[in-house]
Image 1: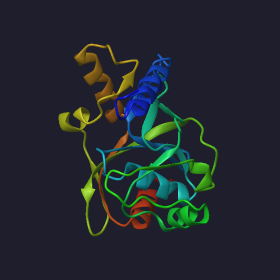
Image 2 (image 1 turned 135 degrees about the vertical axis):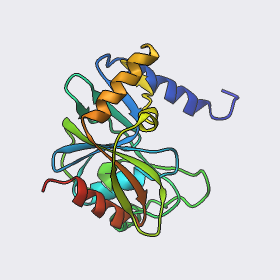
Image 3 (image 1 turned 90 degrees about the horizontal axis):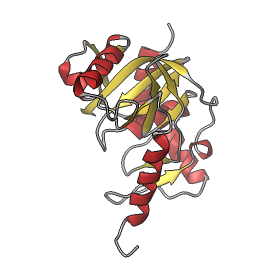
Length: 212
């Protein structure tokens, strides 16, 4: 207990042990949302806007399944909710989220590395999350002055970005893991996103991935 950060280390250990209970699932370090009943994984490294985009979509009335950990069932190709308190970092936010933070008396983070944990229900009102078929994977690839969303074809590079963090494949041979990730990408629409203003980015993703 004398080591700084031990609370976080223990919490992460417990959380990952709980994830292992679902032997039928694969968990990804990704956000997940449901747009018109269609599930989407939002994948990107730290600071690329997974939580910002998923919250912006939730503010537009879409179901937020999780902002940091996504649960995927390979047998049925579905996403399950995996929600906990969302992490809000310094930077741009959807205007509705900004207003909700102010109304709740929560000070948005401003310092580098600062994270504010908030229950999503206190920020946005939307449909209760439930299981949805996975229809799209969006790879977050940095930022631009205007958001750009491009449909791409899967390749070994994209398969490599889908490494699961824990779950049914954690001890599987490398070939089996690669095959399962390739099957996942082959069954969905794959996009590359350069994010811009959170509200404009969410609208672009909504219009592209939503029902025609």
